[in-house]
Amino acid sequence: MPAAHLNLFLGALRKNGQVCGREWPIVMDSGACVTTVLTPAADSLDARYHGTYVRRCIADAQLAGITFAWSLIGEECDSAEACGCADPGAYVLFTTYLTLESPVRCMDCFGPVPLYRFTAPPDTEFHDVISWQSDYQSCDHLQMNCTVLEKAATRQMSVIDSALSAAGRACCAVLSERAGKPFYYYLYRDKGRSAALEAQRRCPACDGPWQLPARLHGCFDFRCDNCRLLSNVAFNLRASYMMTAPDQLPAPIAPCPP
Image (tube, rainbow, N blue to C red; front, side, top):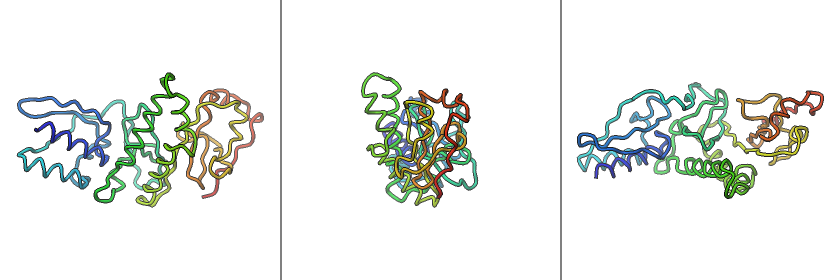
């Protein structure tokens, strides 16, 4: 019974963006259920961030005579530091198969932003965003493994009209409305034919120019401010793109106007 309540509590915390990942081994220690979780920030489990379902899980557990307590162990070594910007100018929905943190990144510092900062409406929380992250990471795993469904998974991550991209852009629209700030969506680019052709790519939504004069946050070479899209130079051409002499590439194109 205690383990069942703890699992429900952890699941509610995850859907509210207060814990990251979805694996938390539970062990019995002196009659208590104990687990270790990764949180976005040191204060992520504060009651002020609890959503409807988290509070409901706490109340249900108390009725069964069960209480939850937690303590901070320390800083996780392999995770990116959470965004500390007071007022980010924009955000991007971004994750990979290796990422444990929030799929929302600050466009100023590129640090992960805890989902609970966006205050989900009652009874909804962040199921849509976390489901998108899970789907995206599944596709990224498939394309990295290069065994089954590699092309299909890569297409989901790369094209604007895929089901994955549609779901991600819908999440961006909702989060942008809540935050009152632009939310960008990242389109993965795996392979291209030449560095010169990569530099001539156009925004896949509006066909406008979107090449950036310099790589942004070590990841993004293209940005359309009109369509709120980001992308990279094809990974198979990244080295040759960087090594090509400036006069062999088209002049950098200014981003689309906001």
